[in-house]
Image 1: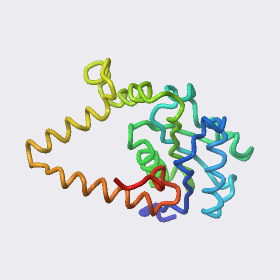
Image 2 (image 1 turned 120 degrees about the vertical axis):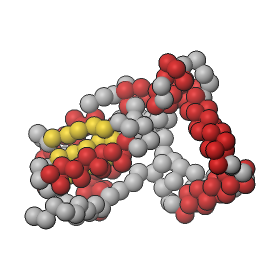
Image 3 (image 1 turned 135 degrees about the vertical axis):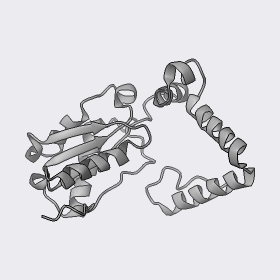
Amino acid sequence: MDRSSVYILGGAQSDFARNWNREGKHFAEIMRETVIAALDASKLEPKEIQSAHIGNFAAELYAHQGQLGAFFLEVDPAFAGLATNRHEAACASGSIAIMAASAEIEAGRYDVSAVVGMEQMKTVDTATGGDFLGTAGWYERECKGKDYPFPRLFGRLGDEYDKRFGLKPEHLAHISSVNYSNARRNPLAQTRGWPAA
């Protein structure tokens, strides 16, 4: 098999506007629904999957749940004994999971891997969620005891960028406009129905 190229055969995306917690759904149900849809889109059977990678930032905080790879068995019994890995890299967790699966394929360890990126963050109030997001920074030094630390950190990055290169408010407004426009075209985006300001 030529391992110089790795391909993504298909995928699925859940509806970001859904509140799985209010629906009483557990990580296992979210994973089952999405993995089955991705397998269908990829025209693969569970028995063809040789390894799995999960990208997730903070399930232990938001859902009191670790060991997410074990839930592949809840998707289909054919996943019994499946080698699974979990990857955490804040906002890049899913991308890192794809990179790890690609590396396994390139190395010849496996031919077909499943990759799942999943978060369930609508389980706590806004202030608590903001504090949890602060753990993606250096919590003790940058985030502990601060309200909504992550927006503050991004604000500091913006300030530094402005200091070095200059940053005009109309540039930021344009980025926001493009993002909302893209979301309105995505039928599964959380903000697809939000009114434009």
